[in-house]
Length: 167
Image (cartoon, rainbow, N blue to C red; front, side, top):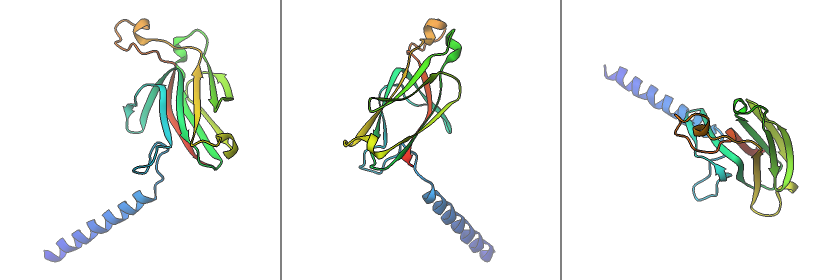
């Protein structure tokens, strides 16, 4: 009996060690920061708090959202995934992506938007951070569309994922 118990303890210990090692190899998300370090991505203005749970999360943006991105001195990948609330308008909104004052893109809003850009180190500027602006020309207030809704926020874009990582 004791031999079976010890075998079980060794097996559980080995599984724990292999699980811990696997966790250490996973890359950290772009929004994570080392203790005492500044975050790579900071939602400065125009964004509501994180909603949803697990892998299905988003944050609503008003007409313009400003994000601060930590400069790396390396070419970076910027990936934006989200949805425009196209069902709220007769015509889709226009979405603009502006990086450090320079327009990267303009496109009609849609569901399941996934855009990726390469940002050269030279475009990041000499400061510690770059500024990303996501701008939409149309917003709505859920309470104005449906008085039963208690949501009085002005909503324009639902950001599901923002990645800022080395290319």
